[in-house]
Length: 554
Ligand SMILES: Nc1ncnc2c1ncn2[C@@H]1O[C@H](COP(=O)(O)OP(=O)(O)O)[C@@H](O)[C@H]1O
Ligand SMILES: [Mg+2]
Image (cartoon, rainbow, N blue to C red; front, side, top):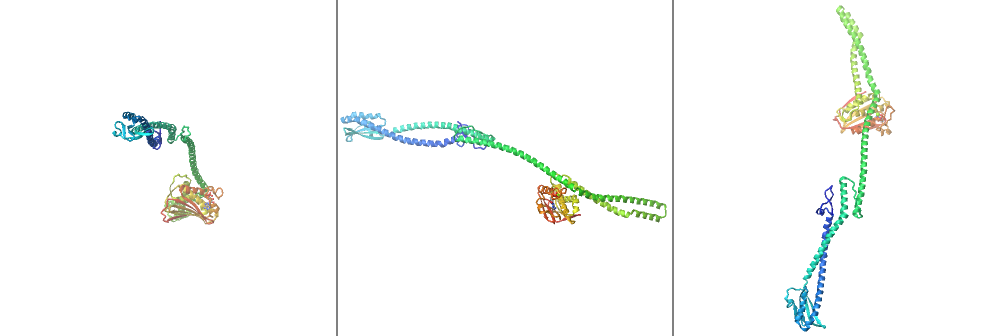
């Protein structure tokens, strides 16, 4: 016989117990609980039953004894009639001695009609014996005439002994039947509750520990059968749900992997787009850049030609000097020689030559410097930069970007840089910030060029703010029409003709400033008066002492 226990430890909630004692652990065993709580009630009930039974039985036995004594008295008094009538005391005493045959009788006495004791048993009668009992008196009549009386005294102590023996027997019978009941109940408990509960618990245990699907084989229509059936159904549903969950999980994993891959390729595409748009911008700017390079190259060429011719003249002059020195050594007429020398100096225009050579050389150096600045800026601009952020000097970037697109704005406007000197570096992507400024300045140039005005002006301003840097590109173009304003940052939105605009400039600016630098970019515009594009970048605020270096460019 096995009882199912429920252990308290977590993760091991259900365990089969071993041994009777263990099984009868009240905290763990249903059967032990049942026995412990029902046994006192059963015992009390039995005790009450025994008490009632003893009471009832005692009364019944007393009545029986009384009846028996009455019958004995009737019989004895019948037999005593003859000795009473004859006055044969000897016979009377021997007849009375017949009472000794009854173990409950203590003594008997016979009186005559006048109440005089005639004879007694044993010996002199009841007064001789210490033990007292219940007295029973019976008149002795002969032809309806009272001729005497018989008194019998009998004891009830033997009754108690009999009653006690009866009760002992009943207690033994109850104990035996109780044991049979416990054994039988245990067997029934095992077959109807213990065994199915054990299976259910071990299935639950398996499910809890290994997450396995537990199915319990048990067919009965009682409550436990219903519980097991419900558990089987639940377990099946759970298993189905788990399988669905696993499938969904796998799908999710695949989806996440795909999404990560898509995100990666999106990032790559974005980087490629930015690079492509930079190259496109360079392509658009190429004409202007070529012009910007061509102009200094032209005057550098002119100057070099001039210097080359000038040096030819100088060579002639020096040749003349050498001739003159040789002549001075041979002739006496120094004056004539000096005159010739002076003439030669005038021919070669040496003073002019010296004056202009210095200017030409300086100009050429400036031109070379300008070309080199443009070429460096182009190189910086077109070079795909590291994706990591690093310290960026915004003012330097502004100068470089405005130099690259000089060809764009120079035709339409003057450009003024109003840069705060004490600006600290910010953490950012240099090449991408470069592109933002370039896009804004090119847009400003286009906006001014569209007006056809001759007093076009672009201001690029940098300022330190409380929590970062503020950059502003201001133009006095025609402004942005209301219906266009909401769309300017949309990818591929442009109001320009094909070849001049691709509609990507501001979309890229927004991506770079908002997504990659956590900043803001917005515009303020007034129809006919111009537009301000404001960029706010976090970090890198300068001392803000109001020292502004202004570079003017024509
Ligand atoms: N400074 C400006 N003044 C007026 N309109 C502007 C200015 N900057 C941008 N826009 C408007 O925003 C549109 C989108 O600009 P952008 O994204 O740079 O593309 P794109 O310059 O190739 O057209 C432009 O076509 C133009 O209509
Ligand atoms: Mg643009």
